[in-house]
Image 1 (cartoon, rainbow, N blue to C red):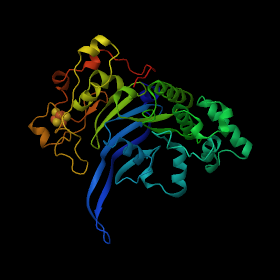
Image 2 (image 1 turned 45 degrees about the horizontal axis):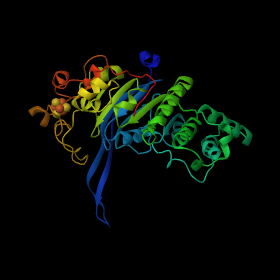
Image 3 (image 1 turned 30 degrees about the vertical axis):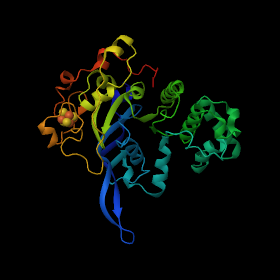
Image 4 (image 1 turned 90 degrees about the vertical axis):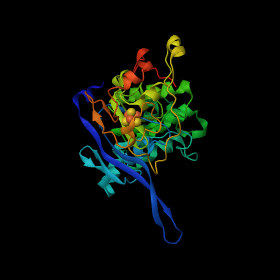
Length: 356
Ligand code: SF4
């Protein structure tokens, strides 16, 4: 756990954030007939200097949540408090200033860089927009410095994105995000499009930059195997809601939600003896539609230990001690009913040696 987390210095707080996308019918007169509830009331805090992992299957709403926090989407309701100010209410110059403090690293290093611009121009653009350096030489010097910071040769400044590998392009994306000296970075599946061997390098780079620059990360990923190496705490999302949130080591040692158990059972165990013997929890059925989520607990249609109450009553998001939150009627029984094989194998956390 980072010192910042121990100090409890909150940098960002999300309060009951909802992001619903309306579904409309009609050509001349459009009327709303429903909504895709991509994010349906999430709350969390992120402490200065820590990394909060946000995990869930494709379509659970995690990337939408990241974009709504950044105000790339206008949230349907809720608050995003950053350094004491509600971002959902900012406009004009205040919003532009906020865009400097919060940056995003995108999933696809191929699509997120303009192929017609040189690397130098890509990284210089935010520096010039925010007037962070005066004069061409000062901007160029800063771009070369940033290339060095992310482990690229400064002489690459005049090259185009297609001349780089996937890992190098992601480093360029990181340099662009750092160009405005942000406090908080949303990393939206930054390694999922990369080769396994390159994933470790990019994650190690992000960790080094966090140590050097005091950055705070929201690290979004679809599996627990990647986030466990970089996160201080982890939030697990299912169908628009956070179902569990805990310190990383605690979450891996003693998950309190069956969905987290299922995700953990998919994490490779480095001990071949344990890996051979363990049983994966295979969830039945598909993720239900976010247009019409199931009543009660949203996970009940796929939960291996669902009981009657789960189908009618939504479980509260309860702190079971030490900041370990879970939304499950059977949270106290989960570890007896579904053995946690990852804990048995004593999978290390935050070792700096990530796997796929
Ligand atoms: Fe499963 Fe019920 Fe817990 Fe939901 S509340 S995760 S259905 S046991």
